[in-house]
Amino acid sequence: MTTRILRSVAVPDRLVLTLPGAVTAARAHCQPDCFAYHATWRLFRHTGLKGHPGWHAGFYAQALAAHPLPTYRPVRVLICAASDEMMLAVLTRLIGARRLLVTLVDACPTPLRLAAAYAHRHHITLTTVRARAPELPDWHDCFDLVITDGLLSLLPHPHDADALLARLTAALDPDGLLLYTTRIAPTGTLEYDRLGRAIQATTARLAWPGPRNERRSLARTVRTRRSRPSPFNSPDDVHAAFTQHFRDVRLTTRSRPHTLAVRLHPTTRHGAGSISIGVAATHPRSQP
Ligand SMILES: C[S@@+](CC[C@H](N)C(=O)[O-])C[C@H]1O[C@@H](n2cnc3c(N)ncnc32)[C@H](O)[C@@H]1O
Image (tube, rainbow, N blue to C red; front, side):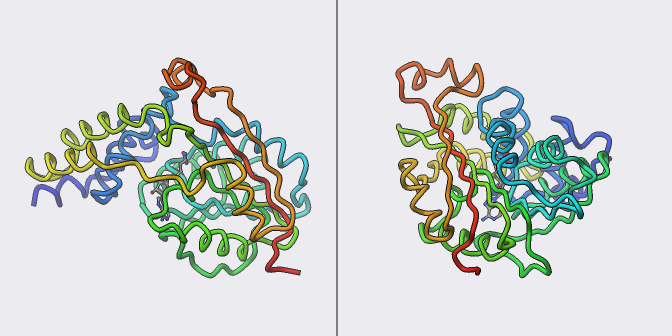
């Protein structure tokens, strides 16, 4: 009963793109398995503890400069999963709100809600679709740009990454561009993973809209959940995965930390910090 009352609270558009607004949206829309992630995401983004599309904006800008998108009609973009509105904001900055015709897919309604509020505020044409990759809907039109940050590392089964890549390739126009960004941690765990889980667990305990025993149990699950191993151990692994599906794959790597928080982390100071990887892929193999 308590759960139903709390979860029915709606967040007004003008408040949703704030830290408390995102927590309220997560309380209203998230399932237990993603609540702590989405409720805390904004905090991690603002403090520079976790990677987000803003970190890769320089890579996206270079890739888009090398692969001009249509100018005589709107640019059809598929964003495959995003924690919040940040990817939409980056694309708006790089391509322009009025040129964009965006479809955003995510497994959870919370990021779809945040992105819809951003799109409304910035006059961007956005369609939101709730779907769980690697399953994706059949699209009416092909996309000029397919873009996804980090998703391949979040899928539950080892073969899912390849299945998703096949689906994204099929969704792309033969002249289109696929951009993928991720981070690889030489230690196997990204910076601030343990601190991140502690903050997420505390948030679950304090803010999950359910009774106390449910909040405690969710907090325990979040605190003890092992981070999912990345399907890629090296930039070469990433390159190999994409060349299965594309004839032209360009890889960019960066080991310089994106934020002060990452620069100060002990693994970075010991020379074992995470590496950012950007993939720009064109000429899908499945298409002429
Ligand atoms: C792909 S990552 C994006 C992270 C990126 N750093 C960002 O800031 O946008 C996280 C998002 O993926 C979504 N997600 C996780 N697994 C998914 C799946 N199998 N299908 C669709 N969305 C998924 C989560 O709901 C979350 O919003």
